[in-house]
Amino acid sequence: MQFKIRPKTFYQTNAPQAFKLYSVAAEFADIQKDDVVYDLYTGTGTIANFVADCAKKVVGIEYVEDAVEDARLNSKENGINNTVFYAGDMAKVLDDDFIKNNDEPDIIITDPPRSGMAEKVVQQILSTNARKIVYISCNPATQARDLKLLSSKYEVKKIQPVDMFPHTHHIENVVLLERK
Picture 1 (cartoon, rainbow, N blue to C red):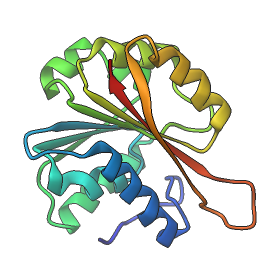
Picture 2: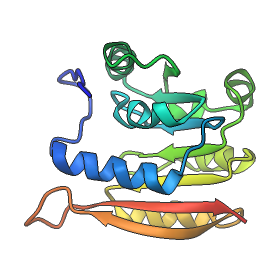
Picture 3: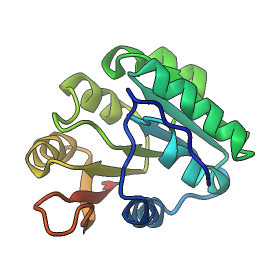
Picture 4: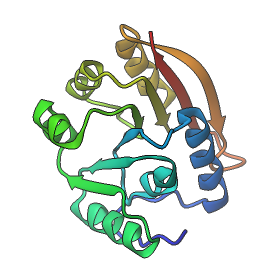
């Protein structure tokens, strides 16, 4: 796949490890052809586009408008036609009306910024009937905080760190949660 990225957008700069990271996320998600997948904090749509061929539909949400424009372009350039992308503050965009208009997610993939997810976003995730959540994080502390909030409805099934920058302490941690 080819991806367009702009200076103000986020992209995993270590491409071989990004492929490994996305492969782990896709394996954990185990997406089926009839699944609706939400990709929260989608950035330039790299994860959404990576998993799109497995799903019925992938819905990406991202705060940075330039990234959303790139995500749409990346889908088009890679011949992917089952993705839709929205720009805006996750806590404001991801609400009941949004879910009603975009179909209930079967699987949620979330890769939030270092600060983790806002509590309102976690509460909205908990209000869905998603059977799985794949939570990718570059900050184990905020990931642990969010996992504790999600534990009322979901349980951790798998954890896999991915070494994004060898010889540094930076990792991406992938966690699979399944509905209890």
